[in-house]
Image 1: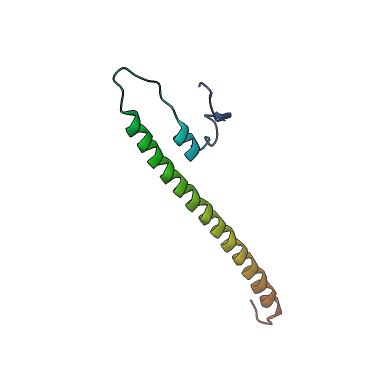
Image 2: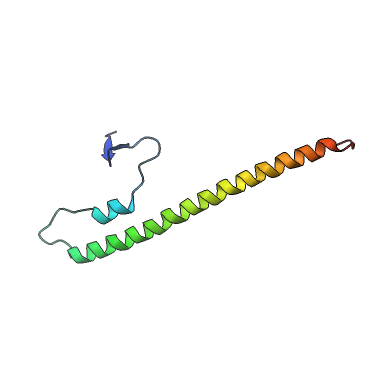
Length: 91
């Protein structure tokens, strides 16, 4: 299997390097004799980069919320365990 590098990182084993909005915006293509309209390509790349930016923001917000909920659950479990020890019941 050939090893391919992108953004200075090895691609092909484990988790691949993620495409960033900046990489989409700055991507260039080799000119062709009967190629596509470069303005349309740039417009499309800008649209993809904008969507990538929004998705990255959403992932970051959800990750933060996930961490907050994990901490809250851990705190609740700790308080609940302390209260349960005080009970005289069979459980």
